[in-house]
Image (cartoon, rainbow, N blue to C red; front, side, top):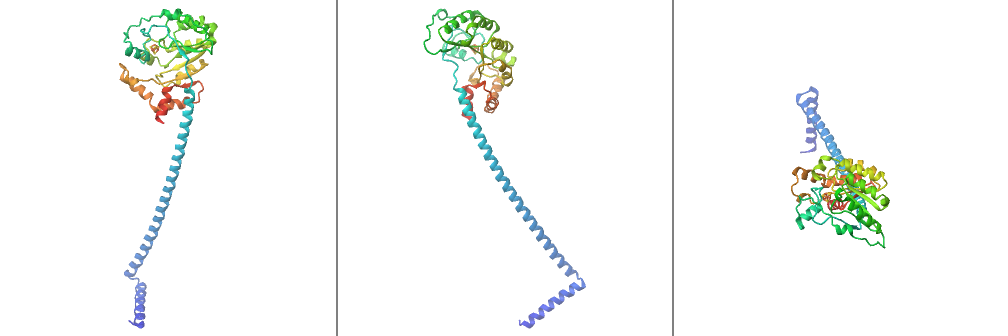
Length: 337
Ligand code: SF4
């Protein structure tokens, strides 16, 4: 096609368009509408794409922020764990005593009859005594024995370690304690204290109070729980009153909450004012292998000793200078870190 023909065609087209526009033909209007809709669609699509991009960017930013927060939290957790370990290890290094001493015969069963008693389990296994026979016999030889003077640093004797102190032999107990102290040693009196025995001890050993450290075992302030686990031991009230009495009479006082039978916050609150030494806190061991324990109690204690609750306990009391966590707690924390 030559140039002239092309020009004619173009003029023709423009003229037709002019006519369509001029007469407002439907065809022309439709075309215009189509063009406008197309433009609008393009505009809308453009906006939507922009919005999508903005959203994506925001999401990316949030993700980055989240992962930074996660990292920060992990670092905080790591630091907390390290701090916790240092604290537990520090307190754990303390020892209860240098020596242990008992004056009952090996076959005597402690009549407190605690269900978690380690000694009872050992006797059942190795001596096979009648565990329901609570006739406790004092080993006379041990009571009459003379003590050589200790020439070196005083040794701390945990006395007793395998039974408790009962009124039927508290006089023998006091006599032996005096001998241990006069030989240049000190006595750690570990007991679930009864008022009868404690009154006698603090009266008769008043001159030696600086050589004596009481450590009363109080595992809960809930009497129903104590009645189940320590059926014949003195009540919570009686033990608390013994603690007050010793403290008010100027003796060194400490408490062992081992095994704690309930989360010990309220117990600690009640005993803390009467402690001038330490409060030792520990878990119960061997719970799952114990016989004749109510299933509900096993469940409750397993929950209480669960790692999360143990950690909660440690966190709650880690800054309390009176509290010492025992090996059982340390191991639970370390093994789960
Ligand atoms: S007082 Fe101690 S020795 Fe006696 S039954 Fe209880 S845990 Fe065993």
